[in-house]
Length: 148
Image 1 (tube, rainbow, N blue to C red):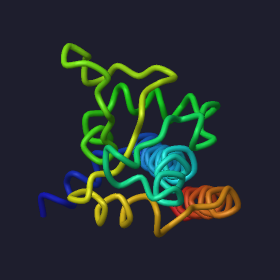
Image 2 (cartoon, helix red, strand yellow):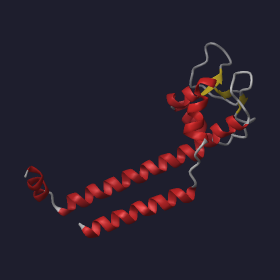
Image 3 (cartoon, one colour):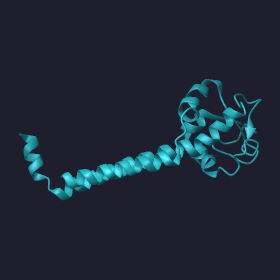
Image 4 (cartoon, rainbow, N blue to C red):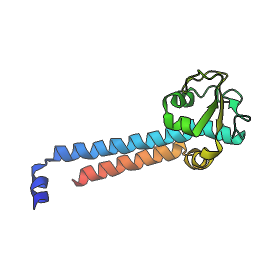
């Protein structure tokens, strides 16, 4: 009975607003997933491809052909979660954890290898998949708007 009273008190504008906010949230989540797969995933796959799994085998962004992947390097600086997956060889003891320059050498620690593989290396989302998913979500939103 309380649900019926609540449903009667909500007008169509509120329902449409909630529906399209949900659609926008799903699209934002899809976009973030694509970014993680395409941008950060490229960096992680480069580390896997060059077998950078210890400080001795670590490589710079340039050696990984990732020097132009500024988004991944910026995300690395700002994301403690990504810094747990991708380690770096410190050039000196006083160096900040989030400091990165052209001489910074990266690797994936053996303890994080499985997580990095599962999160970034196994599944690569394509731009086509992103566009199709966004289109499907928008169509569902339109259909639900018409039905309500």
